[in-house]
Amino acid sequence: MVLAIILLVVTLLAAVSVMRQLKLKNIFALGFSAVAVLSFGFFSVMTILCELTTASICQ
Image 1 (cartoon, rainbow, N blue to C red):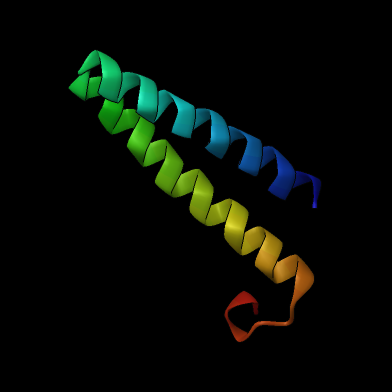
Image 2: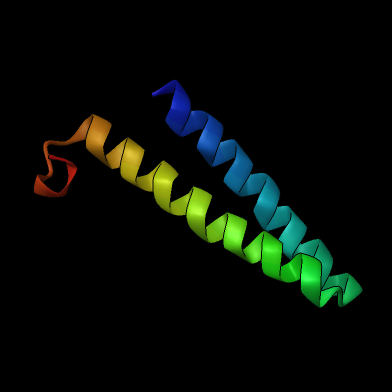
């Protein structure tokens, strides 16, 4: 569960970076931030889901 919390914190920081890069119109950094939000967000949600439930996708 600690891993899920760490991934969630990284996701939130990357989301802040997405908003900041949109404001600065920095497309290259926006791309990397968006990829980080998508990947870390997916893994944090799936880790939390698999820890709390017995979903068939987790096995």
